[in-house]
Image (cartoon, rainbow over all chains, first blue to last red; front, side, top):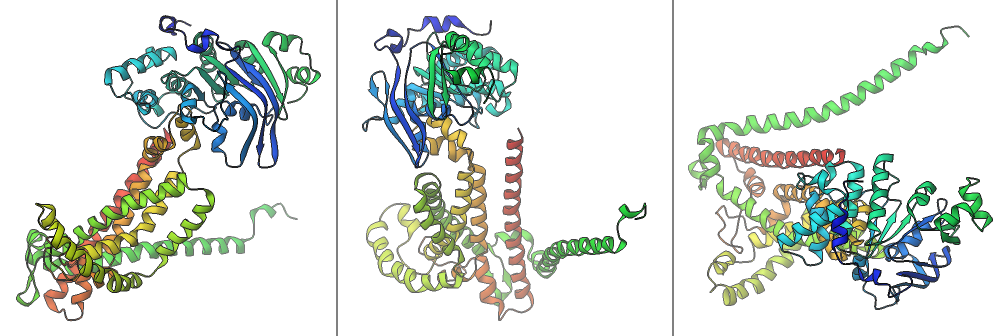
Length: 272
Length: 317
């Protein structure tokens, strides 16, 4: 896709996560999550490699989104949620008492199912993150906004409309704007919760192209109900069912020769 | 069964027609009442405005019924100052409170605060007046006035604004009482509009590392702003129109208030106080004050209406 400016991405130094200090950037061990007394995630153990795209698939209600939201502690916002086990980010358990959730979320950004641009200008949307983290200098902000929009393949489309309301652009553009907004705070991991499910096929393919480019620099975890999408973009795929991790393998292997019967049933469309 | 069975019974049709027309009648009587009131006030009050001249009537400083001079600037300023003071107190307080119960406090705390605020709204204004009379006015007289005299009066500007003399009645007492009275309006409408901000926006903000406070001030409050403004304007309308409680604590001398501690006579108080003995032009002048009040309130309502329409446009985008 021509619109994506890959030079920008290659010019910047690789993130520390790419240095390979750890085998897994994110690693969950025996992670359980309870909504009140209901157990929504059952003993999840899986590791996520740097600079790869990891897809999580499964039928509705299988816990895939819940697990994703565990990885940057967005579930803290839900009343009555309790988590046991551990999930590490670069070797540190993010559920430790002394973890600064705000700093954590700066490094593990999240893109949501429904595009959620803030009701302000396109520029201010992208500049929001850097601003709350202390960047005041106008030129510096301009630079970050341009870079982030380029990374999200939006710069050419929106460069003349930066002061327009973010609500005035199309749904697909809004979603890429939300990705740009995440990138502006230079995270290491991008969590994407069904980022294309509200979009048309063309917008979806743009998001997928974008993900392939972004994985050069970022680690991406995507939850999707669209198996073709998982097969198209991801390096590794995890299959969740009823709160359990059933199978986790290279995407090709999982789709072509699944080792668990339930995985096979699901990907061949026998249920779900 | 004949082939005409689906055309329905005429009786049912008549009943429906009757119901429809009586509903229409209800709605019309509402509108009619408003028009009648406006018409009545205007016909009663207009002659004096024309006689004094609209500019003199509104901008003249002398209110002297014995010499037949009716200029209402002192009352307009009285209303304006008291309302402004009450907003200055109630807006930050109310917004803070709304933020607390909408964003910060756990569910149980909200369950306590919310009914308390609703009770505040249900207290009759005469009770507020009594409270002001028995508690607030003596407090201002015994503590605030000496304090202002000893510690604030020497300051340039601020000293003049606060004043150093007073018997407790006046702008400060009226402003504080009004602030408490309009607090429930501001809190409940602000809270509702804060709560109406979609969860996605909150999450989007938190997910890039915003603190809760940054989320509230940077995203949620701006998104809820039109609703918050509607709440403030509604509260303002109530403050302007409030009569009883203000009457009891404002001191009521028809002068232009020069400081927080000086007495004042807002427009509503003027009408009530003088109605009993007013005749002729004097009575007409009181109606004319009513016209001004009505006019101001209608403008405020228009602002809220336009604000709501604008909000709908944004939602449609």
